[in-house]
Image (cartoon, rainbow, N blue to C red; front, side, top):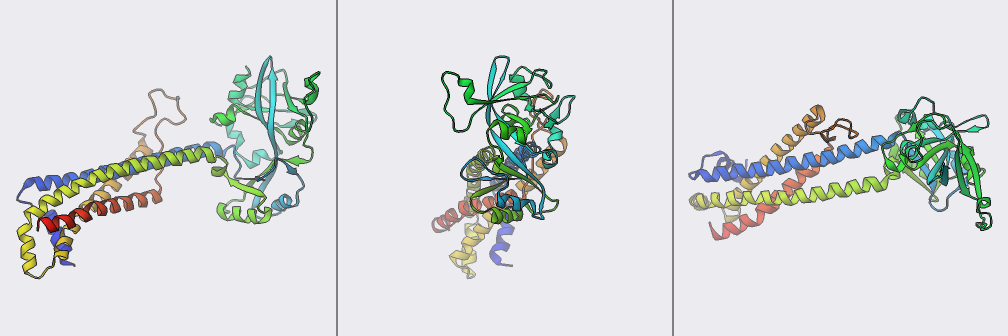
Length: 408
C-alpha cells in the first residue's frame, strides 16, 4: 500500500483537533451523495417515461418500417421489397398505402391520415389491445369497406364507437387541376362503414388523425392502384433488431429507409433526449458546487496537518508525495459520496418502482400511470459515476497544488 494512501485514510477516519473539520468532511460526502442520487433518480425517471411512451407506440407502430427516401409510392411488386418476404428473419410482411384525405360528416370536415393495411395487420401489431367498442376489427367484407377511427377523431366528428351513416372521404384526383365550375369532380369519393370499434393509442397524433382501412380501399381513394407507400415488418422471435435492420438495408439498398419504432417517432424521443441531457447538465453543475465543500475541508485539514507535512518532508517525502496525501483524501471523500449516492439513488428508484411513492396527481385515472415511472439504465449509472469521479478530481487537483505551495 502506498504510504500516501495509508496516511490519507488515517486522516479521513481519525478525529481531528478541530471538530469542524469532521463536520465539513461529512457535509462534503452528503453533498456529493445527494447530488449523485438526484442524478440517478432524474435520469431513471426520464428513462421510465421513454419506456412508457415506447410501450404505447408498440401496439400501433410496426417493428420495422421500410419506405422510400425520395418519393411517395412504389409498385407493390417491386423486386427489392418482394425479396424481404423471402427472408428467414421476417415473420409478417404488410404493404401499406397511407396519405391524407378529407373526411366529411354532418357538416364537419377534417383532414385525416388514411392508412390502408393488409389483412395481416392484426398479426403485425397488437392493435386488438387498443380497441374500444362492441364490434370487432374489420377492414372489409365482400364489397363493404370499413374504417376504424382514432377515438379523438371519432369525438371530433360527433360519433361514438359506432356510426350508422357511412363516412364520406374525398381525395384529390392524381394529376388533375381543380375544376372551379364543379370542384367535386376533381376529387375521388368513397365511403367507409363502421365496424363498431375505435382505437386509442393515448397519443393524439394517432387518436385524432388516423383512420385504418383496407389496402385496396386506400389505393382506390388515392388513385394508386398497384402501388404502396411503405412496407411494415414484424421479425421472428429472438431475431436481433440491429442485425436485422442491417440485413434489410443490404437487400433494399440506399433508396429505402429502414426505421425501427424509436426512429419512426424520432421527434418525440429526440425531445425527451434533449430534456434528459439538459437535466443532466444542470445537476452536474450542482455537483460541481457540492465538490467545493471538499476543497474547504481539505484546506482546513492541510492547515491543521502542516506540522505533519513538515515531519514527512524530514523523513524523505518530497512535495509531490505530501500533496498526494491530500489528493487521496479528497478523492476518498468524493468516492464515498459517489458510492453512497448511487446506492441511495438505486434504492429510491426501487421503492418508487415497487410502491409508487410519488404519484402523478391527486385524481385517480387522470394520467396513463398513477405514479412516476422509473427505469434504471446501467449505462446511465456508469456515466453518473464517471461524472462524479471526474468532477471531484477536477475540483480537488488545482486547489491542492495551490495550497501545497502556499500553506505547507
